[in-house]
Length: 265
Length: 313
Image 1 (tube, chains in turn green, orange):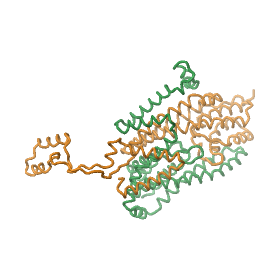
Image 2 (tube, rainbow over the protein chains, first blue to last red):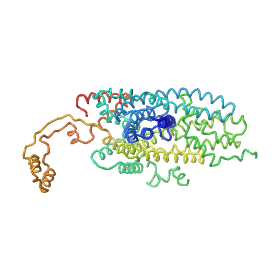
Image 3 (cartoon, rainbow over the protein chains, first blue to last red):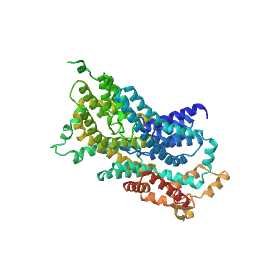
């Protein structure tokens, strides 16, 4: 393992850590983070496969309001290092990702508490009217969030390879087999989280339709996506809740002020 | 009248605010949440609008108040606030409480739109699509995910901020009207449909437990012994092979035993029925306020036990 690999891995970890709080460019999402770690360590295909699997598991991990979700950043980065650099199986990587996600969640809650101090420091600098100081404090907090993932990644890299490999080999067959089986099933939790957020009694019929089409048909995801969009548009056109009060069908679009604004814009 | 009246924010200034708004959550904290990030985003505009130290200090102070919404839906609020600040700097009588009132009034309803649309629908749908490509070892998976997400996100941030800037206070009224509700409902329809599609496709559950073994009658079986004998003696002909293929297609058995596993039975009932029940059970558990991590841990335990007992494989 040369110094170049180490720098690249730490850089990806740092990016993932920053995105874990920003939630903008999505470098913390498994499909991006694991793939990048795989490229950095020279095992891109393993990274890609791990990323794809973890992405399905993490579908429902979202920060809503002040609630902090399990951390995809540490889960992706650390398990991708173990899989692509230390020879763990993808199924072992998935099993390890879960406790790592909780550890990452604890770390980000810790940093988010620490930044209360930064907010107070910013108050002080604001009194002096110093834009520069407020900017530096803000970006400093971002650096801490980056280090939140980069430091654990560095620790995993520092542990001797033989030790990690020895530890992985010591896992008995019944456990690895069982974890692989469970790994195939836990994506259901991700689906359930997304469903739980959106489901209203009226919307279950669309879930049922999607399931039926998918279970017995051969349509690929693009075709399914098109069907889904068509259903959504039809629902908006025909559902009585969006067509109340208007005399005819035309009034629903004509009466919407934002539609007009968007058209002019 | 005085010089200040003429200060207007240019497109360039607004672009700087847009760019910075991507770092809104960098110093997210449990006390005032996105407050420092909000001030950080506003700084390019405040710098231009206020020149004296006192003005700058009071502007910073009023933008360090509590703020928290969906990180993308902050964009229209920023747009509206830019207009307000522009007017305030131009001498209009707008007090701090009014500006904070607009921010607080908008953030709640907007977060209620952003969460189901971006986190609940767009990211899971795009993520699942990309993951399916990645699992077939296609590099398009991560590439499409990254590009599509960021193009949509940046376009949304810029245009909704501009819309807020042009519309000013009117936007609140418009946003709380029909369009937002339509967007949320439409996204939820799409999201629920796609979740239904995903459940049987990528949940891997297999029950290899054998339910029955039936021996095939000799007449229903392809006579492999005769073929290998013919091959050894050099008598194997194209016609013989053709007959074998035809027999297989006609439904003749290859194995001496017909093994039916629990999985075969379930597939006959309805393919994907086990993942469906598992998913619905997980939804039920979530509604009972059981944490997702606890459910995942439970599935690991079930997986290991099921594997050891030979029920799952």
